[in-house]
Structures are given as C-alpha cells and as structure tokens.
Image 1 (tube, helix red, strand yellow):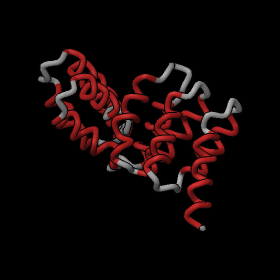
Image 2 (cartoon, helix red, strand yellow):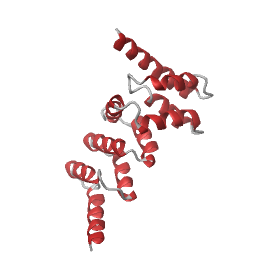
Image 3 (cartoon, rainbow, N blue to C red):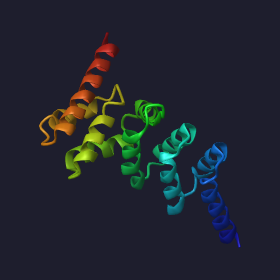
Image 4 (tube, one colour):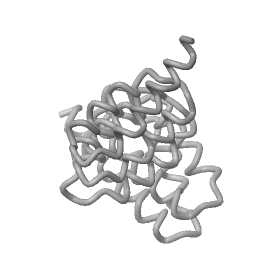
Length: 172
C-alpha cells in the first residue's frame, strides 16, 4: 500500500514537471530532490532545458547536489547550451566554487582526459575554469592545450586564463 502511494506521488510530481505554471514545475523539482527512483532523475534532467530560468537553475542545483553519475553529461551539455539569460553556468560556478573537489569537477577532469567525444571534452574544459580557486584542474587543462580538437584547445586556454587570473587576484 505504501509503495503504491509513493509510486503515485512520484507519477504526480513527474506530471507536475509538465505544468504550464513555472512555479508548479519549481515545486515539483524541489520535491524530486530526495527521490531516488531513476524516473525522478530523468524528470530532473528533462527540465534542464525548461523555458523558465528558475526551473533550470533549481534543477541544476538539485542535480549537482545529488551527485548522480547519470546527470553528469546532461548537466555539462545544459551548461553549454544555456541561453545567455539562463544562469545554469552561474549555478554550476557557485556549486563548484564552494566545492572544487566535487564529483562534477572530478568527472570533468576525467572526461577531458578520457572521452572520445570532442564536444564533451570541450564542454568539460570550459566547465573546469569555473571553480576559480581550484588549481587541481590546471594540469589537465595544460595537457588539453595539445588536444587534436581546436575547440578543446580553445576552451582549455580560456579556462586556464580564468584560473590563473583568479589565482593572481587571491594572492594579491
């Protein structure tokens, strides 16, 4: 009986993610925060491209906080696909700045060094420049300057500039 009620509640939250009212979608995202079912994760990922910035930002925050490996690539792609007025990048920056050793950053380092997907490597290189006092990304970004892809090399160079500029700021 309890399992059936939990399943029904999850179904209602997933349906609520499709509501035309943005505040209802935000409420559903917040309630899905602690749900461990794979369909809850899929629902959270689906709203990373929502038309409302609040929905996107809260979904990114929830997914970053969950630390679920399955959310890595969708988060990275959403971060790079975000419209300029959507602060997904800002949300990721904030989380990474407070936790430069986070699972997300470690996966970015791994993806940059190991992924066969050129676009994903470029996205990872770009994301590694966000935790502005995280120097553990510098070595892998230096190596990415030799990547066969010009996009990856450019993203790595931009991130290194941001990291080195922030390092100078903090030591001044």
